[in-house]
Length: 289
Ligand code: PDD
Image (cartoon, rainbow, N blue to C red; front, side, top):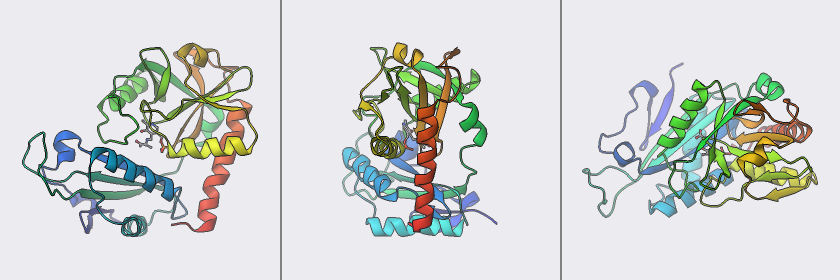
């Protein structure tokens, strides 16, 4: 079956889907996006994703392209037309098309693209074995809270990590504190049993998975503290893990070539991983498409 994409009001074959060469997303990375997980055809945490999309758009002064109801319809239709049971939806909104100029003209119409694809989801191996990460300086701008398509430092960091045989790069700010991963939020469990993740300031993206895992940790009565932690603290942590829409909860077992804890996924990580998987499964049962 051929894949279908939504492009500015039309459902078109994926291989022929195209945007204008003067789309400001293409020329200036002037746009935002969301990645939403699909489980049994249902969108996971659709509400928080749409809320964050609206916030990203408003921070950049891009008008909302359509109502939430219309957007939900498009997303559900892209999932349906691509027959995705388990996978993800990618939604991108750019400022639109205009002759190239840094400043934009009045009255621009945002451009919208949505695609969906099947994914097997995070592997059991990753969950059982954990992954390696490397630390790198955070070279990004000062508004990482906006989910902008401007991802050059992120893609370069991910590539560096992969070339080093690692799953992810952890960004470090100028004070040596971990901000987040190149496409994930970062967490540690201290030897005192405190669960830490950086506060959702402008240095990180407030992950939807992060928010769900915070709620699960609170419900489970874990000692959760929302604060930044340094590279040193991460190196001497009992456990570390990453969260994201596509990776869920991934245990980190090595940082810059050194073992974290005993080098195996720890009990907090396993527990939150299981709770998050159950949480995702509940969306499918509720049929929240
Ligand atoms: N990445 N931090 C960054 C920089 C991210 O790009 C992402 C998501 C996250 C986690 O956010 P969430 O839990 O809402 O997925 C944190 C997506 C999945 C991506 O770019 O593919």
